[in-house]
Amino acid sequence: QVQLVESGGGLVQAGGSLRLSCAASGRTFRGFGVGWFRQTPGKEREFAAAISWSGGSTYYADSVKGRFTISRDNAKSTVFLQMNSLEPEDTAVYYCAAARGPIATMSRGEYDYWGQGTQVTVSS
Image (cartoon, rainbow, N blue to C red; front, side, top):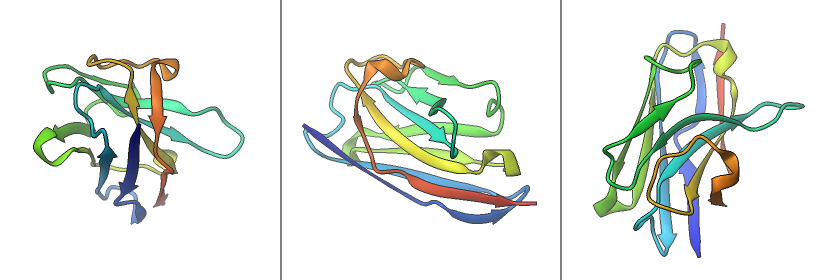
């Protein structure tokens, strides 16, 4: 079992930056790819970014490519999402998730463990 806790969300003006963290406990992230997803009321949870266990592979949704960077520190069992040039459309609850295997994947169905989420609000 893996427990995930997100932090770092908050209120920021458009053009600003935030850094989200996802800390794992229990089995930790060992051997797992990790993804960040986001969700707004009334919409499905959508993929934002993913990173493989080794950190050697990363994927981004087109909507965040060039602005968001995912990284990980396996020694600290923590994954980060650096978000720059934030836009009001980035407002959402952000969730991290651990995948079944070591690869990075955009498919929500490949993730077995989810955190509780952290709210990100971008004002215009």
